[in-house]
Length: 205
Image 1 (cartoon, rainbow, N blue to C red):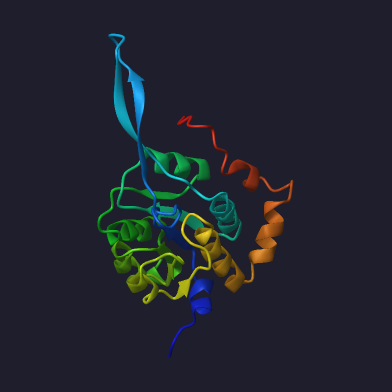
Image 2: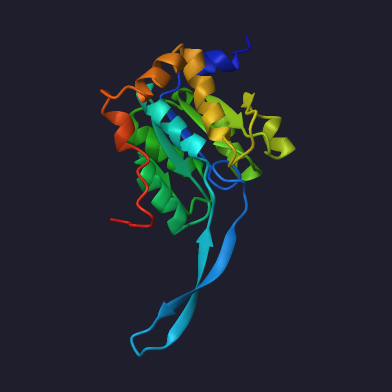
């Protein structure tokens, strides 16, 4: 018997995202930045920058209001990603993960969740092992065709343009919680929304 994507979504407790091409459009900007040295000279170091969608950040607030925990698993290591994860207060942040199922198994042990309670959002073949194993596999609109072919749900928007929000809203809608979570997110009396996604312009404290 085939299980629908909506039925799969109703069981989700944890939603995990790749970063490049999912929470960003996949472009990696690397540019030189001058750094003053103790002897008064100026050296140059290369800095990596990425662009994130504010819609995805708001979506992660909705996910929390819907009782889910949120995280990222990415192959690259970037301080930009670490900063964004701190802004969003993500429960799970795994960088430098060439084999992403290792991180998933760690999350399962930490949270006592089963694979069918985990959703994963990916765009490239490095994401396939998790997508094949988890309860709900989501491909973004700009994903490779091999990835879309194995997804239970494909987002309307591309990575970096609200794809993460699409995935979250799909799950919340399947649970019958979307409108409730939206109203909670704009309720002045709810303490959660104001505490999330407070960017500090690079302040890493």
